[in-house]
Image 1 (cartoon, one colour):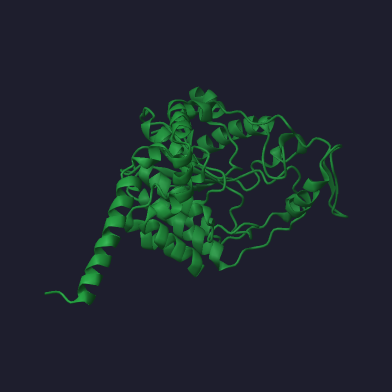
Image 2 (tube, rainbow, N blue to C red):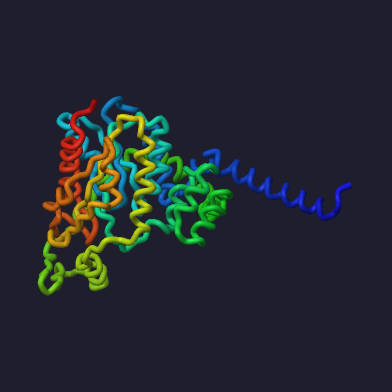
Length: 363
């Protein structure tokens, strides 16, 4: 006859197993992701994943792009040049995402590593420069990836966060996904009919809306900088509250980052390239337009950067660091970091041209 202590242990283990199985039935089968809030971090990733996964494949000429919100090209515009380039562009990046998030999405979109002619990645720099935002310890990453993470991914994903607190959050949330999804689930229970209507509408139209999106016309025309005095002249009528953001962004001198950022990019971009090690798929890294006003003198070159080291491998290509310098003008930007409509259209054409020059015609 079992002792009371043993019976208590068995009861606890049975309860934990029941919780895990219930959590798995809801969040690991794909059922819940059908109803996830479209504007959430998880929803943005899942809608983009399913839209790209379910799109009809066009053999032999697909290019998939990744980047955060600064990768502001428009596939719809890029594909106006397919007759010349030979390629059809599709975008899988999300605002605020980074290399770790792109790896899991890319892996699940192309498990056989044979769907795309090229993977194109837009980055702020190719030199491992210091950044205002840490990508290594980013609480959004767990939310972006929660629908993609299997139990076998859990340890690798968790230890990619330097902070013990973030590691524990990743382990806990990776085991019980409901912990990560609790706010979304709570909102669903509060207004189930509204969420279901919204989900049905989004599943029907999201892919088309994303593809047809066009950026704002708003520009920074009138912005100027005296680089000798480092004084900014702002456009008339600009909200004074934005001025500090402009100063922190535009006047910031680039410096090389410490090892953590290099290690992070080396690990995750290396894993992306390794996924295609037996494939003909090429990798292209491009440096995005830096901002509405950027002096050429502030460009760093780091021959030992994670990206440049990766480019020594076969089928990995680097774009020219200042390829998009002609876009670095106030009338092509809507804020210190993001292109406006005119800038996005110009960038889209230039990106197509650069990719075609680097990798040649489809094969």
